[in-house]
Each structure stands twice: as structure tokens, then as C-alpha cells.
Image 1 (cartoon, helix red, strand yellow):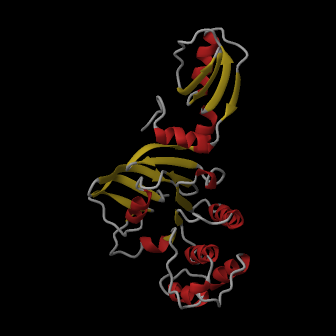
Image 2: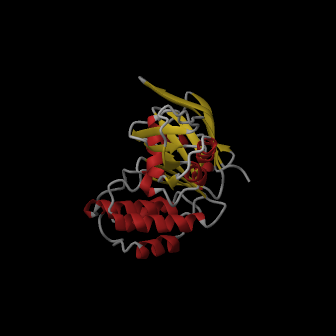
Image 3: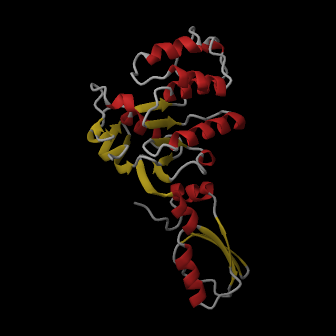
Length: 294
């Protein structure tokens, strides 16, 4: 099966800003968390991915098809939810959905109705009178009702309350149960994607710092505490080190190599704990002391 997404040497430039080159793929059945601070190029990536912007060089493929804005085949395979939910404000939710349905041959009115009931959304209410949370629900319904193979999410839950976020996450888990589908999830809030994503890609100032499996990061990154009278330790994998007297607290991106080095130095009474995705993301995006990159 073709990759859900393929970025091949893609570059997009503006005055004072360059995104890329981006070279990575997303396989069907996977959820990729695309993480970076505001202004890092996440939305520009999304706009190139959805055909709203043309790159200066390179290309993007959706399930093997270049995302040419003049072609329609690949567009029917994607569903998009952004942080700004754009609708006809004076129309009802139902009328907005009916209008969009004509552009998708695979649109399912039953799927839309099921999601409306699940989200407890008043379909007869004018969009202009919806809360931010209900606008987000309507946007997700619109994106999912034609059963897309690729769901593209650009900060979809920014500013939403925890209950609505939980509802969103549950629906996304159901989407990915079909291993022929994929989700590309862009956010600066790492807590949203910690349990949802299989892979993580870290973007900073237009450059991709790292793309890896989430479980690989959780396994390799640790906080380690120990005591030593040697204050000039040179340990592999260390990205942060704090010393108070003889008490060391270090953070490492390669737990096994750090632990092996400590044992070779005959240091015992070692305690270790895993880092959260949030902590790891901060170190990767800051650059840390020696954080590995692409």
C-alpha cells in the first residue's frame, strides 16, 4: 500500500522564513504528531499538504498521488480540521453539512447524523450562535462524514475544554482502528497527543529536528539520580545535568549507554524514572546540550 503522506525534498519560502526541506513519510494505520512552537512552520506544512500553498521545490504525495490543486482525486481521500472553523455563519449546522456533502461522493448522511447525536450538537442552530467547542465538533463531523483515508488536524483542540478534548480523542481512536487510515496531527500542546500518536516529528524554525517512534523516545529518555564525588563526569547521552554536593540528577536521551557508563565507573544506588513526552519535547526543541537531530 502507498504511504498516506510522502514529503520529498519539499521547500516553502517566505520573506525571512524557510520551511524544509521536508523528507518524511506517514504510513497507513499510523498517527503522526507534528510538534513545534507557534511560528515553527506547522501551519505552512499543512497548507502545502492540503494544496493551499505550492512549494518552491519538492512535492507532497497523498496515497501515491501528487497533491496538485487542479486535480480532485486525492482531495476526496482527506478530511481536514483546523484551529479556525470556517462555515457559512448564517446557515444552520445541517445546511452547512448538506452544502459540503455535494463535493464528496462517499459522503454518508448516516455517519454525519450519528456524529451529531454523539456530540450532542443542535443541527438546526445557526453556526454564528455556536460556542467554540461546538464549532470544533461541527468541523470534525464535516471532516469525517465522507470517511477519509487521511485525517489532517491543525491545532484542532486549541482552547477547548478537557471534556470536548476527550470526546475528540475517543473519536480519533475509532478512526485509526481501520489500519488503512492515517492521521497527521499538528499541535504545540504535547499533552493532547501523548496517548494517541505512534510517531512524533519535531519542527523548529522551519527545520525538522527529529522524527521517531513515540515508544522509542519513552524508552530511551530517562531521569537518573546517583551520588559521586567526581564532578567532572563525561557521560554519554546526557542532555541536562544538575549537581548539588555529591548528588547528581541528569536527563539522558540514551538510557542504556548512560547506565552502562555509570556501572563501569562503579557508581551504584542509581534510580531512574521515565520522562513525559512533554519533557522530552521541550529538550528536543530547545536543542538541549547534545540532543540528537536528523
